[in-house]
Image (cartoon, rainbow, N blue to C red):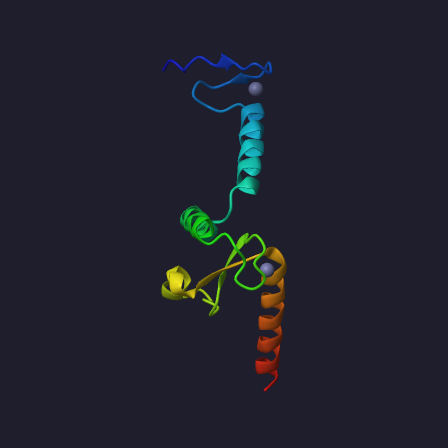
Length: 119
Ligand SMILES: [Zn+2]
Ligand SMILES: [Zn+2]
């Protein structure tokens, strides 16, 4: 039975035809690792694409921070959505905030949560 001729890889190894040489597998793994590192996880992927678009459009319409009037860079959920998709995409629940006000708002919210958890 004729065996398939081995091919000579660029690295000098003889590899069965159609098989990946260990050196190629290493390159594949490295490429995949690099790709995985830059790629957000699956839930974030769905989230970022559509959210980024909606967020940018919203900030174009409302470019000023709702609290201090500075340039808004963040779309904040007035009522925290906590993964609730309806609340998340409800633009009536969105407000433009600058980074400063946004971090302040989030800190207050966290304090509220802490207080609630203590009860
Ligand atoms: Zn090779
Ligand atoms: Zn502000």
